[in-house]
Amino acid sequence: MELTDALSALFLALVQGATEFLPISSSAHLIVPHRLFGWEDQGLAFDVATHFGTLGAVLLYFRKRLVDLGVASFQFVRTFEPSEHSRYAFYLLLATLPIVIVGWLSKDLVATHFRSIVLIGSTTLCFGLVLLVADHIGKRAKQDAGLTAWYAVLIGMAQVLALVPGTSRSGITITCALFLGFTRTAAAQFSFLLAIPTIGAASVLTMLDLIGAREPINWAPLAIACITSFIAAYLCIDFFLKLVEKIGMVPFVVYRVILGGGLLVWVWWM
Image 1 (cartoon, rainbow, N blue to C red):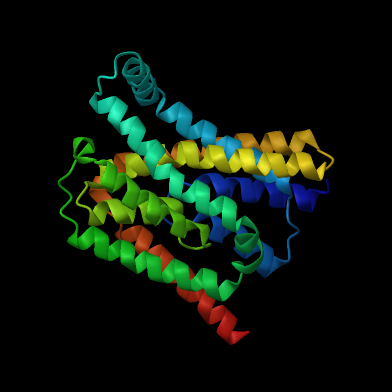
Image 2 (cartoon, rainbow, N blue to C red):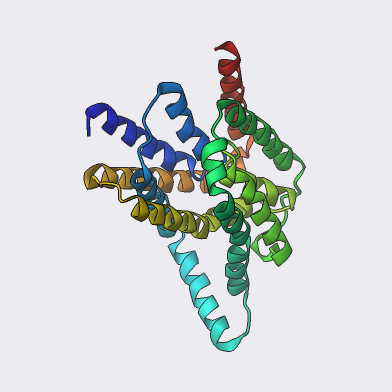
């Protein structure tokens, strides 16, 4: 791998990790450099490596919560007596179903037709403003105990919109949860935990494509990409959850407006 390719891979892994859990769209930040700077696609193996990095970050960060959810789910299977933790685990799986089904059916369409700068700029801008409205009018009163199966389905259906680059998976799920009246922290935690089955499913599908493609694998840059995305994602999760109640969504909305508007102006100017 040439130095330029190595640096671009390192940069893209850092971007993937830093933007996966912030409500600013990781897919937009990954597609834009390819389109603007003419960088070559890093390939399926790179996608798998960065996804495993971000997945590892969220698993490590929420390890105690995940143990509680797992133990409660096991106890429910044994006794059929639900608890708050077992219900929460069920809601996470329920919210995952829509994007798994729609993502599987539309993966070719998304990969080939949802890549234009105009679309990315528009969705980055528009869904950023929707996030601002949700943060402003949401009651921000419900905690985890307020979650229901219906709310989980609604958040899961909202997550399907993240298949369109620029929407932001975390952004749209947090937006929906805020509209439903959840606190910023509760909304963010459900969104981040929802990333586990979602990213896991996406990683499995991408890995199957990788096996089918039989691409030659250079393990060294993939290891660097995985570690880089892991560190960046972990730090961003920690940063966001510690500060979200204080700073709110306005800084992220401002960033999205600048990014989305800048992309649209760039396309118009060119």
